[in-house]
Image (cartoon, rainbow, N blue to C red; front, side, top):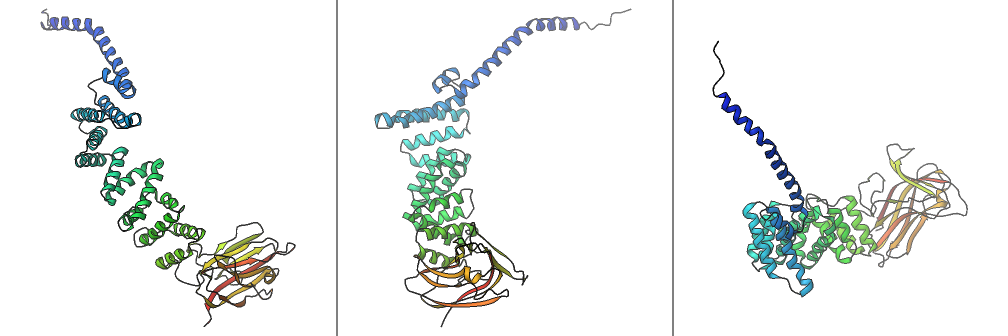
Length: 426
């Protein structure tokens, strides 16, 4: 019987045998190389740049870290010598260009090139390079910070503030400085800067409320806030009732009643009326023109459906007859002259006429120009009341209040109040 074995199989087997002999050495070399790479990566990422360059001189990451370190050293030299080190900036730019030759889309290297160009006085080239870096990455804070400053120097508020918006969306720690920049620019150059700030706020960025809060600490900020409120009213995102209430109340606290009156008239929020929500059925009104209800011990105040007239909403006051509180109040802007207060009231318990009163007090100040019982008798049916008062010329604003008349002991009093109005007496 003839041997069917392929004659070429023997040399192949011999070759495979030789490979098998070398396999342990190949695997050992591979393991050593992998171990070196494992050790090399932390050095590339975390070792001091000068050490990392010696370990991996051809790594783009190492070169970029070295470029950033050189640039920082040039800036920090000013603290020691009083002047920045231009040689360091040139070295940083050269290293960063080497990085870009190996990794053309390294944003941080591109930023170092742009900043080194700026330090060399080539602002046009720097602006082009850093604009590209900023467009490539919204997270490159140094690039955007330089663009903010440079565009601001050129008076380009739209571009400067757009890059500032990119920064404050990501970093809460720099918001105070950027917000101060917005406010200073808006105060110094309102015709050009304020519309750009309003345009940013109109997009409802996540920092909108923080910026509005930052405005209320100074008179300058309040003026900016008042103007922004008028501008935003014409846009897509006017101030909410909560935001507007915050502005109104800060204007009161700072004694800016004329400004409050002007802003309200400009916005028509709430619409002009001597008394807002006199029927207690319109909750969508900003304070202080909405009823501000007491939240104190001894009294419970709420706007609820009337027990007698279920289709009607009224103010229900549950008062212990002993505590001194402003049960409900709102601000009015009445011109000097004679007025009549009208309302309806009924008693559910006790004698509201003895324990609760309508008052009108000048603001600012504490001059009371009206004080009259909430109800003339302790009637359990709805009873109208009316009282006249005079607003003097020295009374620019007025607080309309349901005020307590505290007694010497606790006597439960429950009153219902509705249909409140103040009209001029001709």
